Amino acid sequence: MGVDIKSEIVDYDGQSTLLVSVKNGGCVIGTCLAGNTEQSGSISSRTRLFYIGNDPVINLICPNHGNKQSDKLVSFSPGFQGYDQKINDALTNSFKRLNDGESLGAGLHDIFSLLQDGVYAVYYSDYYPTDGSGVFFWGGYNISHEVRGTAECDRMIGNRTYKPCFLFPTQPMDYYTARTKIGTDEQVKARQVEGIVYHVSGLFSALLKGHHGAVSCVESGVPFRCAVIEKITEPYTDKITADPETPVSEPELEEGIDASAPDAAEQLDAGATGVSDEVMPQSVTSTFSKGITGFRSPSVKIPLEVFPKDMLRQILEGRSEYKPAHFNVISAKLQTMRRKSVNNNVLPHIVLERAEQMPDFEMIESVYAIDSLSDEQLDCLLRGDVECNGKVIVSPNFYSSIVTACNFLQFKDPKRFVDFSIAIMENPELVAAHEYVARRVSGQTENKKVFNFFKKVVDSGEQKYEKVIPIAETFIKRYK
Image 1 (cartoon, rainbow, N blue to C red):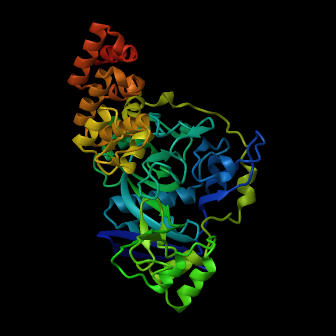
Image 2: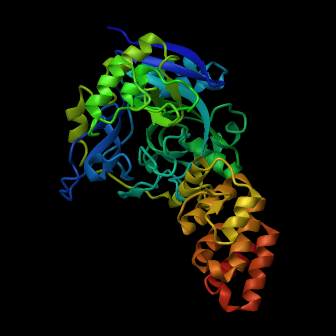
Image 3: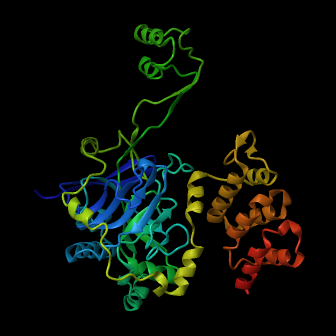
C-alpha cells in the first residue's frame, strides 16, 4: 500500500498554517519510547529515541517517569554512523526543491513519505545552531547531560505557543570537513532555506539537512532559516469565563458542577429541571471548561472547528507516538560504540565564539513568558516591587522577576536592557542580582556604554561592586 500524503492550509485567528497528513508512511524518521535503558538502573527514567532508518540518532533520558515538565538528559547515539544513501537522497532532493522555489508541501514531499503516520504542522522559522547554552550544536552532545529547554511543557511559558529554535545534530562530527564548508560559505548567502528540521522535544529540533551550512551561516552572520516539521499530538483546552451579565445555558452549568460538593445531587436535579437563583446565582462569574478546544504542537494551536475532518479523525484514531516495525534493530544498536570520536575543536574558532553570544534557553523562555514590559514596570522592579498598579509584573519572586526581565529585554530591546542592567548594578540593595546581571550584560561585547560602566567599576573599586568587578575586568580585556 502506497503512502497517502495530503496537505491543506487552514486559516484561524488571523494566521495561516500548512497541515500535512501522512498515512502508511515509511516510519523511517521519527521518535519513540524505548523503555528503561539507562545504565544507572534508575527505574524512574524512560528513554526516548529520535531515529533515522535503522539507527538511533539522539538519546533522551526522561527522568521522573517521563514527566513532561522535566528537562531531558541528551546524548548523540554512540553507535550512529550516518543514514543510508536512499534517505540522504530524499533529504538532498527536498532541500534542493525548496531552494528552487517550490512550496513547503511540494518541496518536502519526499521527506513526508519517510515519516510516521500522523498530522504535521509545517512552516519556516529561524534557528540558533546551539545547544541552548552557548555551545555549537554539532559536537555538543557527545556526553549525556541535562539540556535545559528539552521539557515538553515549560513552566514559565505555560500553555502559550512558542517556536523551537535550538538544534540536535543528525550527523557525527566525523562528517565535518573544511573542504565542504568552503563550498557552503558562498552558497548560504544565496539560499532561501538553510536547513530542514524535525521537532523532537521542547525548544529543540533535529537538523536533518544543513550541518555544514549551519557552520557557514554562523561564521558569515547569515540567519539560519529552516523548514520545520512538527507533529501535532497534544489536545488543549481554553478556559471559558462566563460574564455576570450573560445568561449561562443549562449544559454549561451542569459541566461546572463540583461533584465533591455536599449538595451535588441537588445541583444535578436543579440542572435537569431548571436552575434556580438559589443554586447558581447569575451574578457570579464562573470559569469552566467545555472540553477539548483543539490539538496543538509547540508553535500552533488548531481549534477543532478549523481542523479538516479527515485530519482530525486521524489524530483521534491514531497514536501520538509508536514504535516502528524495526524497533528491535534500533534498540540493539543503542550500546554500540563508534569507531572514532572527534570533538568540535575542528570547527573554526570564530564559530564557537559566536555560538556563545547567541540567545540562550533562559532568554528565549523569557521572551515567550512575557508579552511586554513598560518603563513603569521596570521602575517598580528597580524599587524592589514585584507589582505595578496592583498586578504582578512577572513573578511574585523578586529575583526571578529580575532575571526574566533581563532576559526579555536582552532579546527584545538591547538599549533598554543595558540601561536596566546598569541601574540594577548601581543599586547596592539589589546585590543578590548583581553577578547574574553583570554576566548577562557582559555579552554586549562592543557596547561603549557597558565598557564605560565597567571601567568606572574597576577604577572605583567600591564595595558595592564586589560581585561585578571580576566580570568587569574580563570584559575590559576583551573589549580592548
